[in-house]
Image (cartoon, rainbow, N blue to C red; front, side, top):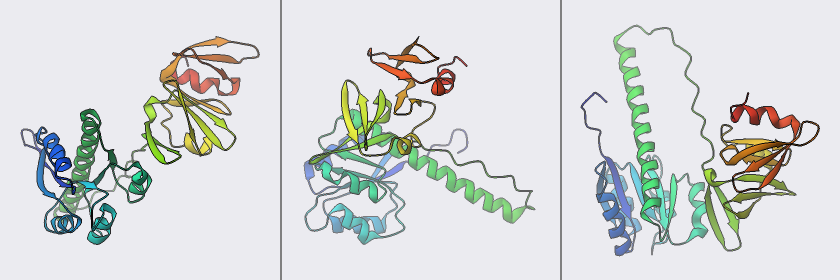
Length: 271
């Protein structure tokens, strides 16, 4: 985008069979000058028609609708659907299925303005990034037809995207926890104990597998069974034989094995 040029608005379609729910979303969207609502639909068939007729950047899609639910809408439209999908529903049992169809995010009714703002900001960033990549491809194609092709430089490595939220399944419900809120993780048999804000949650996943999905600038293994959020570390207290206690801001003490100390020191600025 050239200096002074106004960015194209983010085109949003709202689909919900409850009028009050649609009005609530529309009111929140109206407060954002970067958003253009291109339509609202009260049923699945209306949504299918709108998606086929109008270009849409972001789709707020209710799951539970009479006659045709949100997942059936997506199947009916088929590929290619380039819109960022945000499911909106009162039933958290649909959360995992939502991400299986590559939804960008998920709003669980009732949600507050702060949660909505975070979701919308993420959707807008997703759209802007996609537009930049499209323009870059178009420019590269144009240059390729008007000038001799230069020696191709190796493409830059794709940016690594780390896990942003944990999906915590419990009896009859599914909850989400922002990764940044995690204090530390501890392996326990076939589960991981997730410690956050004084609460403990269980996650059925190998610790090594989860570690590979976490940002290594924030999370570091300090023991074969423990990973800590370095932003929660308050101090290190020496023990014996090169081992330490890691003291967290909430007072918890975790054991640091000497084989893992170098990485923690580096993240804490001691190396």
